[in-house]
Image (cartoon, rainbow, N blue to C red; front, top):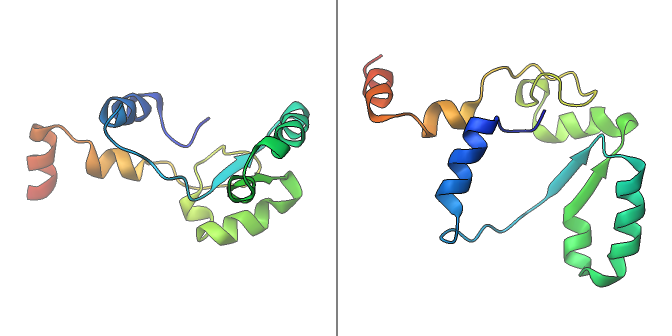
Length: 109
C-alpha cells in the first residue's frame, strides 16, 4: 500500500506532468527490502550529501520514532508497514480533488 491510492496518484501525475517542479524535502522508505540498502550504498558516492540526507530508510524497530515525527498514528495510513496507523480516509484526495458537483455538496454541508 502506498501513501496515495491509485486514483489520487493518477490525478497528481496529470496535475504535475511538466508544469510543477517538486522539491523533495524528505523521502521516508518504510519496509524496504535488503537490495534497496545495497543499491543505496552503491549509489551514494554519486549522490549529493543533501540528497543522501533527504532519503531516510526507516527500519521496523524505528517505526515508533517515525510515527512520533509524523504527529501520531492518526496521520499514518492503515496497513502502512508495522507502524499501526489508524488513518483510513485520504485527506488530500477528499479535500482537494473533488469534482465540482462534489465540491459544492461538500461546502454546503
